[in-house]
Image 1 (cartoon, protein in one colour):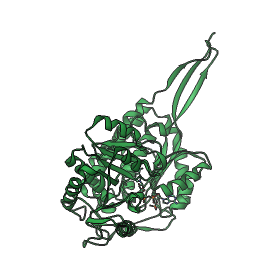
Image 2: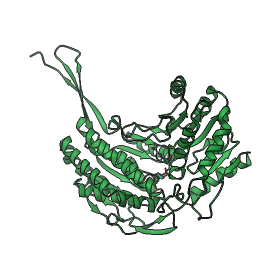
Image 3: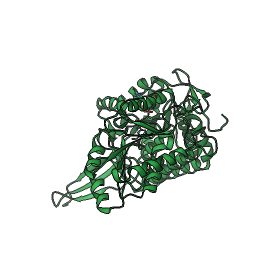
Amino acid sequence: MNSNLLNTASYINGKWLNGQGPAFQVNNPALGEEICTINGANENDTVSAVDAATAALPAWRAKTAKQRSAILRRWYELIMENEDELARIITAEQGKPLAEAKGEIAYGANYIEWFAEEAKRIYGDTIPGASSSSRIVVIKQGIGVVSAITPWNFPNAMITRKAAPALAAGCTFIVKAACETPLSALALAELGERAGIPAGVFNVVVGQEAEKIGAVLTTDPRIAKFSFTGSTEVGKKLLAQCATTVKKTSMELGGNAPFIVFDDANVDEAVKGAVISKFRNAGQTCVCTNRIFVQQGIYNAFVEKLSNAVSQLKLGNGMDNGVDVGPMINKDAIKSVQSLVDDAISDGAQVNMGGGLSKLGELYFEPTVLVNVTPSMNVATEEIFGPVAPIIKFNTEEEAVALANNTDAGLACYIYTRDIGRVWRVSEALEYGMVGINEGIISNEMAPFGGVKQSGIGREGSKYGLDDYLEIKYLCMGGLDG
Ligand code: NAP
């Protein structure tokens, strides 16, 4: 691959580091070909990154909010100037269609733009004191060194959603990028350097020894905060590791999104929303629809229209024009989705569309629609993370809410109805961090993204997103009577 944003080693303390860990390949899932070999980092290199972030903290923190804001703004502009090239890197290493990859670049950059602005609005508070001679003042300060671990499904945006508020708040930052998609992370570092981010403020560790690198990032006492996006299973482990030094944590974990279509919904709109929320990124997003609940009265119409819409989706290499669904990330992902579909079929589900591998190659799973699904099947209880839409019939509003809430996950959910009373009743009853109401795409930098229950802790984006990177300090001002 030809790109002046292509780097193959970790970026630590403003330098491209010759890592001490094993080298590893980055592959293009659409073609099954190697893109390049990465010079992997190990835990010693990760300690060097913590050294660098610790050393860089005082000067970065001492800059005015306006100075930090100007650097972030320049980073945002450079990302948007290089939008096409960055999108091609995402499609090459991750597989999503180019138009979606471009969407991710703009989406990810928007967080940097947003927090460049919010950097200047970290306000404190004054509170009437306990006596006439005292006043209470509250200030907010950046928490310190922040570490993060991110997944492969949004290799750009999952980093900017964390780095932007951290840098805006005056924190320094180290991220371990996912092994499948290190190139997007390293391209961000390249542009960050060009934007004037000082050495040590933004560090990217790429290495295959996730457990050892993760151990440093979750236990080094110099790190004040750890932010993770990834699976619930790994998140729980890292959360426990963070407990040893009582770090502040943000956890963006897995989902099991219900998509509820009531009898009074606009069926065409519901189908449009279901297709986009289920099949983008080949079903590999944490907010992807996982279970589609359709009320009895419109069940047949919905199934027919959804199957029609899914039959129009073009599967293929994301670099090609007109492709809607790209390959899955790797063979394990294919295996896991195939086994959920096979289990469902053996438990009585019927395949309306798709159901297995396409002739295009070993990482291409056909967009699939399953009917006669029951809530207890694995395909409904587990996060599918693939292009499979299981449809479940329901009768009453109460039943739909109970089924939707019957999971440990609580990230995104979706409801389609034109009844305003039902919109409020159901939205308030659903145990989720985000509710799409007649909307299948809900994430943007202005809104607080995050989950409840075992889907996570904390919020990313919006005016609330900075709080995860700030500490509140109470100043008790006494002796004011003179
Ligand atoms: P994953 O297996 O949990 O991996 C995520 C990151 O954790 C990768 O960088 C991985 O490194 C690293 N990792 C894995 N095991 C580790 C360990 N023992 N110690 C330290 N680091 C470790 O998740 P994934 O398969 O990449 O991503 C899919 C999951 O992420 C899904 O469950 C999805 O719902 C969730 N997700 C959540 C959100 C959200 O905002 N809530 C957004 C996107 C994705 P390697 O790459 O080197 O293995």
